[in-house]
Image (cartoon, one colour):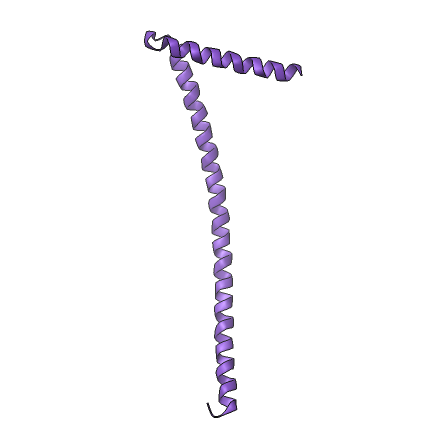
Length: 96
């Protein structure tokens, strides 16, 4: 590198490569951010589906215990008491 002109050309080439890499990484980052946003939306949908299924399961479990099987009489009474307490809370909130 005895020639300053060679040094300038070499520096110019390195800057072009850096700018090229920067643009590539910038575009890749944008794509990854979009994928991340899509995955967050999908995760929220799946969490909502899970909550809905959990509620369905709880209702089905209550329905099965209320059905009257002799084995689950105590559990049925506990569920009914819990439902009555929840209804009482709702009524209290409505009256306030």
